[in-house]
Structures are given as C-alpha cells and as structure tokens.
Image 1 (cartoon, protein in one colour):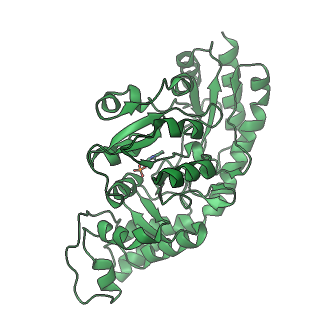
Image 2 (cartoon, protein in one colour):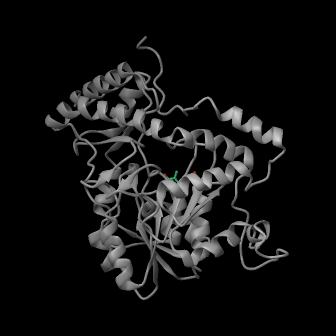
Image 3 (cartoon, helix red, strand yellow):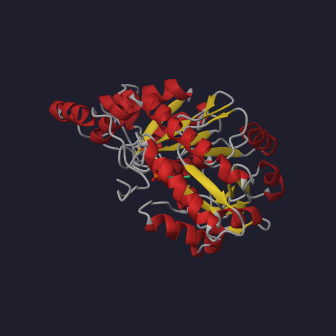
Length: 381
Ligand SMILES: *Cc1c(COP(=O)(O)O)cnc(C)c1O
C-alpha cells in the first residue's frame, strides 16, 4: 500500500462534465458565448458580486485583457510581487509595460502592502496583488493606496476562486480580477479563466476587447444592427465545450472547496508538532481571510536543505515540489522588469518553500504518510 505513488495533484471530475459536453454537442453549439458560457457568467456574477464576469481561454488571457483595458503604454510601470507566475508580468510586458517587483510579506507571501507606496513613480499605472495559495492580500490598504494615487488594481486571483476577504470574493475587490480554471487549480476545465470587471466604466470595452475588438456581443443582444471593428482586441473566449465542462465544476464548487479544506485542515493539524520543533512553519491565514485550500505549503527552517528534503520525499514516491523562481531573478524578469528594494523576503522564502500533495478526495493515510516522511527528512539533518 505504502509503495503507491502519491501524486502532487489529481484533477477532480464531478461526473457531469461529459453529460454537459454531450448537451452542447447535441445542440450543435460549439463556438463561444453559447448557453453554457452564459450560465457560467451568471453564476460567477452572482457568487462574486462582480459587475461583469467574462470567461476567457485562460487566466493569462484575462490578465492580457486587463492590460489592454487599462491602455498600458510602453514605459508604464506596474507594481507586483516577484514571487508569482510569469503571466502576472508577461500580460503587461506584452503592452510595453514595466513590472516593478516589490517584496512579499513574511506571513502570507503576498505583496507587502507597506512597501507599495515607496515603489510608486509618476509612471506607475497599476498594482497587481496576487493572492498566493488563495489567501487574500491586504486589499483594504491596497485599494486605499490606489485611490490616493489614482492607480488601477488588477487582482491576480488565479488561485483564489471561492476565497474571500472580509466577506468579499477575491477578484471582485480591485477594478479587475482574473481567475484561472487550469487543470492544476481548484475548479477546472483544462485551460480556462475569467475576467471579473468591477468598474462599470470598463464593462463595455471588456466585451469588445474579448471579441476581436468588435461589438459583436452587443450585436447578438440586438443593441446594434451590425457589428464592426471598434478597437484593439483579440480572441479571448473559450469554446462551448470548455464552458460545458466548467459548468459541471461550478455546480460543485462549494463541495470541492469543502473537501479540499478538510485535507488542508488535516495537514495543518498533523504538522503542528513539526512546527513546534522548529523544523518548519505552517501557512498563515490572517483574520478576515477565508481561503479555498488551493495549496498546502510549508516553509522549511533556514538550516534545512530543501533539495535533500524533496529528494527524500520523492524517494518515497511522494510528489512534493517547490514553487516559483522569483521573477526578478529570472532572465525575463531582469530584461523586462525592475526590482524595487532588496526583495530579501522573496529570496529567503522562495528558497525554503515546499508544496505538499493535495487534491479532492485525498486519503487520510496519504497525508499521514507524507507528514511522517517529511518528519523523517527534517530529522536527518
Ligand atoms: C495559474 C496561475 C496563472 C495562470 O493561469 P492560466 O489559466 O494557466 O493562464 C496566473 N497567475 C497565477 C498566480 C497562477 O497561479
């Protein structure tokens, strides 16, 4: 039994995905913005309170739409963490924007709201908080700074579907929010995402940019009598088969979250003794943040060799992995962005973080075994 491989992630299927895909197939509706897409939009708007939710082919696509919507021009600066996925930066770099990397908080690994102001220059246009592991950034303070300096806020809520900050859905607090439904996230459809538009002034243009720069969406609603090219845009929408798959997942989003939370809680309990002995520290969830159990990570103690720990776990067929190489220290980040300050927390934490296996319906024994082996690995040194 214990020789069985423990994967890092297993995509969860609700069982209704093929049924909905068959419906779309039967109806002969394959292009985007069909009935399933509309159901997903309504669900997302209702659940998040966003003005408008628009499915995209990825979170990357949603972030690219955000950069277009904000009219990012060459040389415009965008404040973001260095400890994030490349798409957070790339979306703006595609428009000629310059990512300005600011350090993260020690507790949540989220953009440190206290370091943002010092990084603002006359070229600053936007702040992009990334809700790492589905745990919210300090949004009240970030929105306050944005208002004071006239900046836009784009939440990279790729990992934050179903998480909240002071009762508000992540992605619905900034001017724009981006979700991911990639296979590795909580609610999935293979490749997929959504843009949440919370600023009414941006809603109409968001539809246009998503539909190749045309007013096709308005045309289909009968609001205009022909559709034409309006502005710079691209094709950001997914097809109906993808939306049909996603619909099956959204219907069970609460169940998925609850199930993951149980596994997350079990890890948290099992790892308390290891934290007490100083081997590692567990994730911190600040008050007012309800997370979605997207990830269970630990920060190993400074004297622990991460490579050895991961090697030991992998030897016992446990797929545990580290995470981002900070963008400011990667070739692309050095070429296209700029670091603000020393980013010492980013460097220190990114070198000691490991992520543990977690998926829906994970067995308790697999978690016990993982923690047992992690304990052994830490004790070896
Ligand atoms: C997954 C992820 C993305 C990209 O999502 P895609 O849907 O794969 O494009 C962007 N930002 C963060 C923080 C992510 O975790």
